[in-house]
Amino acid sequence: MRLKQLEIKGFKSFASQTVVNFDADVIGIVGPNGSGKSNIVDAIRWVLGEQKGSELRLDKMSSIIFNGTKKKKAGNLASVSLTFENDKDLLPTEYNMVTITRLLYRSGDSEYRLNGVQCRLRDIRDLFLDTGIGSNSYAIIALGMVDDILADKDNSRRRMFEQAAGVSKYKNRKKETLRKLKSTEDDLDRIEDVLHEIS
Ligand code: ATP
Image: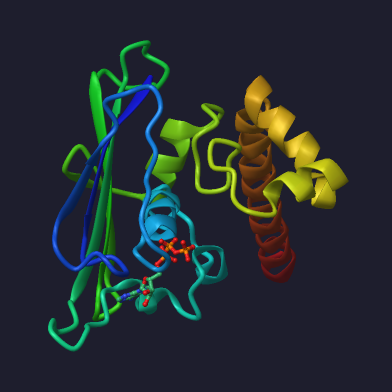
């Protein structure tokens, strides 16, 4: 599997459409301070489903939309698309090219798309589960993360190995199943109460 392309529009400092092609094995992004290098990493985290503004260096999520400069007025929509070549069938989909898109409108409405078709965040998370790719996966090493891993802060080392070993998928499913089980038990309790009342 290979990261092929990042397309950004209206996201943070990228007012106009910007396309980054990842054609070589190693790609370096260089530029003066404040030119938007870290915003590119933020865009990748965001499209992969990051929900915490603080992880994207924001006070609130709506600040992600281009907020204008002296010469250019603020935008109404932030959009980021990330394209992967699924050549080794690592992603559980029939498609050879997979593009995920996230959009946020100034109104607060948001949308996720998978190859252009609207989907849920959950569909995107499920697709990348245990591939090492995700908003908080080891594929993106942010400043300070190495310290956290070495210090094993909040079990971060264990979580990283679980992702790499493919265990987190089953842990997530177990959590979801236990949640459904609990909700069914609550429903059964309620039915028993009603039966007591009418008998
Ligand atoms: P450094 O090398 O100093 O780390 P950098 O190249 O990584 O810098 P970034 O942190 O990616 O730069 O970009 C910061 C710039 O992005 C700032 O100029 C900031 O004003 C701009 N920026 C952030 N959010 C928005 C937004 N919503 N609208 C317009 N510009 C924004």
